[in-house]
Image 1 (cartoon, helix red, strand yellow):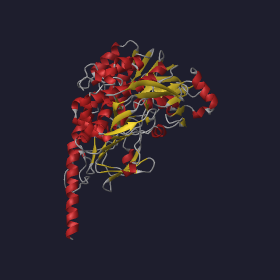
Image 2: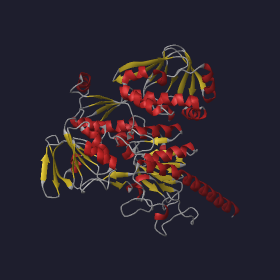
Image 3: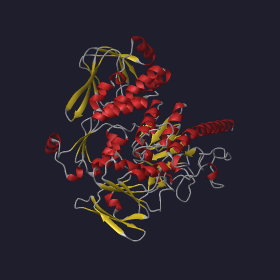
Image 4: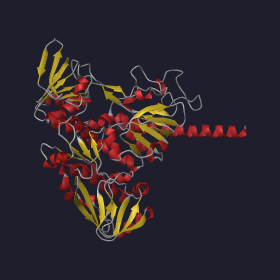
Length: 583
């Protein structure tokens, strides 16, 4: 799939029904009878009568449908109580999208409009087909990705959010859905008569907005991300019954890389993340120094490809799901979840990354989600169109965000505490910032006060430079990118060695005497923690290079070390079993 990236980008630029027409052959490839014959060993035949549904939105389809005869109408629920036909499919066509790689919920209805004979390929067999038949697999994967892109662009099949565009809850949920590449629609009652009519028939309190109407008809009132994710079936059921060869905590670049390489080598893998795939890198508007992308690629696009690739190899993505602890005193290891359940794993990769620090500014927490942001996506950017904004930070992420926001904002005030950017930012970004007319860099400067309006939204910002001079401006949006601290609080129940700042120590960085090994003697691998079988990659690891490419490299490197540990653990258990039998 050498040109898949270009195909997806072109599809996104075309958008909506225009994309359906311009990419129809790639979105809906026709398979010849001999090609369907190549698929038969992966599936089974089923029949459907006229007007019988193959599956409904919000249900789990049995897998991918390859139509042998008959016709099927694919219909999307674009608004509550209303459906729209997307396309009719006939002999040689197939019905599926990305969710079917992992047994996810359907985002459309599929209804037989003629008697249908279909070959059904279960998700596990679909993944086997993609790997076994490269030519067919390439065409199917391209179609799966483009169909999801189309659904995202049109908002078809996902939840409908009713509320004001700038409402903090709306921004929070939109960010969550966008970061997880999940289709959705927004209905603002101040602009949309249908939304206002719905609220008239379903009155609610201001604090209950936004309302979320799920595809299955359930209505949620200002839900948390976890509540919404579970309502949409994003989290696999019965997690407590799982025992993975490898559990990865964190779906950033390092975690996704480890997942892809481990699953492609036959390990059962589960990836846990509390919010979305991509981590901090997923919020980067354009990564220009990543090998192989001379014109740059957004963090979301890079992570999205890895996310689909991982599912192709059978990785279970458990998002959103918060991991609260890791119990290392037992084996298999137990990964505790926020609802009290636990999941077993024979090995663990800590890839939970780092979070941007909160500066010591009075009332900062009050304005989080109400004008204070820790990322800069198109959702936040549209809130500050033609306005002045403040961005705090001097690293590459801050530089990328400043350049991105400059295309929307009237002016970007870039504040850094140090005397320059040269110690913390790549030169190409420094040059670009200097060449951007509406970015003004203020060194040796920091925010000292935030104040709001009557609705509790951020309204004014005051900052101070090293001379003691204060400047106050009417600014409604502040973006904070001021360094990071490791997300390792969940390791407090496990004796994984960490440095004074909380970063996980691995390999030769582990203090003397701090090692716990299966055989009591073997030295740790370079990415292995003080607990044998628990590894760390990416920003969370002590001494790591804080770059996307470095995290991906560590994610790939850790897999052979995991294999070595699992083999040692199997050998140790076999020897113990033999000794017990002899006794």
